Length: 327
Image 1 (cartoon, rainbow, N blue to C red):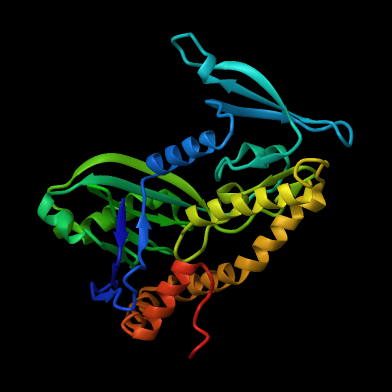
Image 2 (cartoon, rainbow, N blue to C red):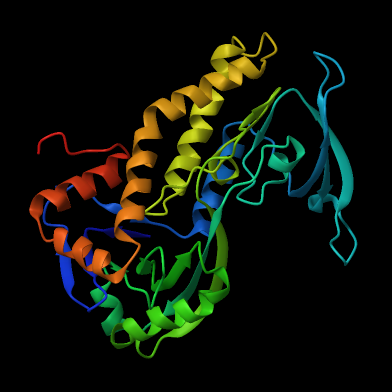
């Protein structure tokens, strides 16, 4: 939808720092609409041989023996002729279950993966006047301050022909409407005349679940808890964990000729943790350091004036590994 090459950091006192000069010509942060991205991924999977089911997963029965299948129960909406669209109850036998069903994962509950702390993210997709939209053509904004979030940041992100205006919090979920009003007020001059197109709210995991593998069932993406602190990014890690999981299953099952075990699924977990664990650790530390008070937030924005900090920040975000080995 949009290629962001400029980022404006806005402090509690409304000091603005422009970030983006360190980007190379071919570097950018991609902004997407989930309804478009998800549809593209589903269609591509179908083109490559996957069987798509328009349904709602309800429950699953655990294998009774070593080689027995899981039995999934779901409501099939593609086979429902009734007006109520309740779906037709069906079952499906499978050898391996990969739970990619989001932060409120039913698969995670079925395998007793444990709970995690979560943030609530709230945003309004908003159509703004064309002259104001021009400002956001390649730009995103991040606002920090107690008025917009007590422990996270608020944002204005470009989305195709409109913007997403939102915020998030862990410690005061009941106050999310107050903080949303805060970001509306802080950004009011740049979104004046805007018309709300859609309101969205989602839980955001704060850390991985205690258990991500049980027997021949595993979790990926938000279901596993793969969202980074500080930035709140989850889409990349959802896609990456899905690919790494699938590759491990193909490799360890010897191309589907042998049944995998939990040890085979832990192969994916271990590789993912080794590659991205340090990134999660550092971003967690940064969030605890800079998102705790307005004084700390002001210092954080001041730091972002330094070219080296901008380079490290963008490189770490773009390449998903902690950068900055050249102090």
